[in-house]
Image (cartoon, rainbow, N blue to C red):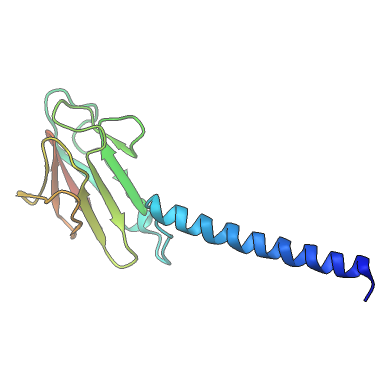
Amino acid sequence: MSAPLILLANLLFLGLLYFAIFRMVRVVYREMQGHVTPSRVAPSEVAQLHIRSVGAEANHPRGTRFPLHNMTLIGRSSDNDIVLRDAFTSGTHAMIRWDGARWTVEDLGSTNGTLLNGNVLIERTPQPLLSDSVLTIGEFELEIEQ
């Protein structure tokens, strides 16, 4: 083989090696950031939250519906998927996640806690979210519909 052909083969091999390393680092980074790979079932077509009751300072009326995504963040901050403005809701309060088989809800270290069917969630411990379950976040009561 000639020297230019060997050089080209080496460059091609290095390019493929760097591409594979880049893809592996990207997968690890996405896992560390909490991204969830979409499942075969489109959960946003299957489930949604609706507001059952609200407090006096609520920014959404009773009956408002929110579609759920693979990972849905709920809180007072405007960078959440569902923004609930009230004094008892933390900036990023809770997360609802589809794990490919079921919905789970997790309190993200909120100041005032999250209730699931009247029971306080343990911080950073995902709990199954069944149909007709009621979440209490601040002065909002939210019900899941599947």
